[in-house]
Image (cartoon, rainbow, N blue to C red; front, top):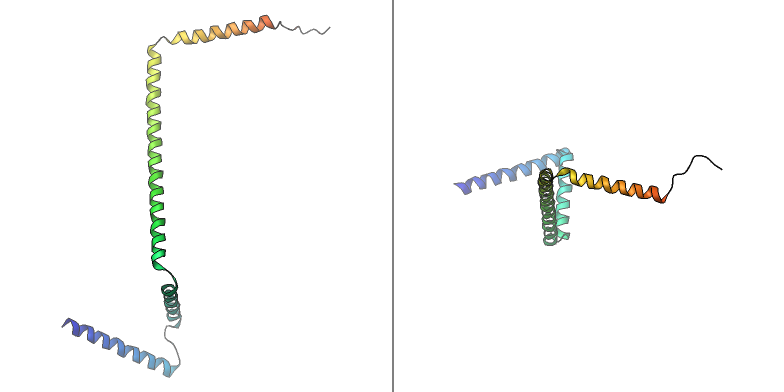
Amino acid sequence: MGSLVFIIVSLILLGSFYVLTWYETTRGVRLLAPYRSQFDEIVDRMIFIWKHVDLAAFLREEVEHLLRTLLHRAVHVSLKLVRMLERQLTRLIRYFRMRQASLEAPGENAREFVKTLSDFKDGLNSVHPELSDKED
């Protein structure tokens, strides 16, 4: 029964083709000419590609390009994750250092810096005397 359906459909399509070609030759008109011309161009292009292009090499290059793209995206995402983790760890370390610094005596370091700066300034004054505004 199934093969009978295929045979009948094939006969209907063949008869339709003969009726179409008879109609076009008697009238001198091509039905749906722009669409059929486009379809003919597409078929010609596909036949040209089939005859002249090495499909195995083309497929190999396309798969290689796809893999490179996917690997590049994976590396990019992993780099973003590493940078995010780095920022979080930096914040955590900064928090622990600030906490440790607040537990220690905070004034000693500042006082040492101010004392060193004052000594340096005094040393500059002793080496370079102040200039007067008067000119001789």
